[in-house]
Image (cartoon, rainbow over all chains, first blue to last red; front, side):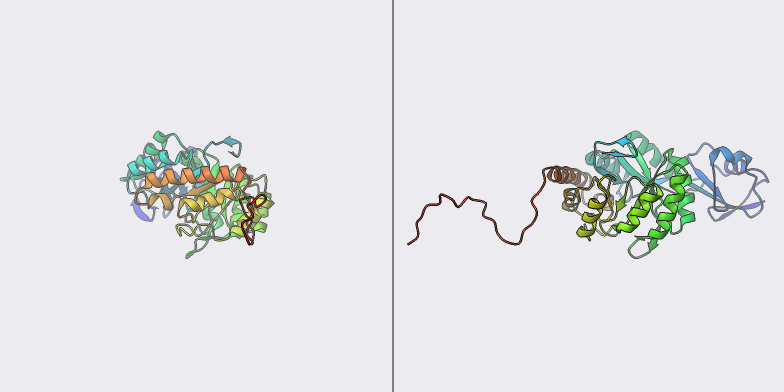
Length: 65
Length: 257
């Protein structure tokens, strides 16, 4: 199944956001997520099913003013 | 001074961007004596670790973080970013930026008020990056903001206080709301001037980060903020148009013809 993570296309097994993040190397990382422009809390990732073409945003802490 | 019930001794808030290295950033934060630093959030891929190491550095410094919504141009973007920041940084504080114009990075005050209301209703403690406009400030307070952060000048411009009259008016109209001059400061005298107006704190980044010696400049800003605050409390003179002799004239020797 093809999804987009920060605009890059990835093929992942059908399943949840939590599983996709794990398979793409984000396991244990300090990140926040959104799917199709909607915030998905860390506690909701395991219950969030992904669909073909979903757009995932993954952000991490960064320097800011 | 307190923001949303959090007592702070330092009146300097420092941004964490644009430093030459993480070590220089750490030195500058220490030299500024800031207890609050601003942070942001950006996309990170599975192979990157930059965000994780930055977060470790901030944690080691033991400072409180104020996440921003920098770069957001719409209410929806800003609100979603705020939610991500609340979870990522484990704080209800948010420096709310809704940018309306690209050249000046001037806040979109209409979007700002709307986003501030949504976030305040949702339990956030909002620090709005705004202009010195009194009516907008009133709407932000109505929306739930208990701190206001008007710009001194456009972000990164180093122009200082563009509208001293407007900033003074804002101070006079909101005697009980903590006011922070955020953005546009270039040199320590700008920060001192803001504090002499009775502002509670300043927030700056580029002036320190891009100085030749960021740690020294951070210390200079800390000293200026302390000087300005002390001067404000000491009740400075009002300017006048004509001279007023400082040396008493009574008793002066009569030496003329």
